[in-house]
Image (cartoon, rainbow, N blue to C red; front, top):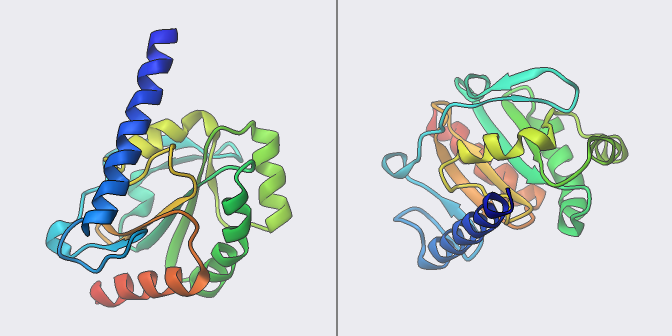
Length: 186
């Protein structure tokens, strides 16, 4: 059991290092800065299959992210940058929520702390239960990792990663990434 935990930590560290290196290297031909990447359609990774429990007890699977542009954010109530970005995520979700799906993936929290965070910031979208966070994150094939919190991806209508932000995202950046994904899907 300890060996599995150590291997999990090592895998997360490697995934974070690769994600940061890819961000520094430009990650592809799409637009990129140190922490924000956009991917051209031919570069986009396909979302893997997953089925998870949400904090409210409902089930959610990857098919719920197909057919519309989606935003997926990895967060924790203990994470200072997550608290900083939460109002911006809420603002964009409320402004674009009729055209865009939003999903949170809560990591390393107990459910009570996660739900208190959601109430405090009036999060209008569902979040994955922390016990199922690993299952959801693995479906993103390295585009998300529990070691880089917060992290956000924007998915196109086909469930492919159109953009990735490692670290906190502000409203203007997120809105721009979402609008780009919406424009590309027309």
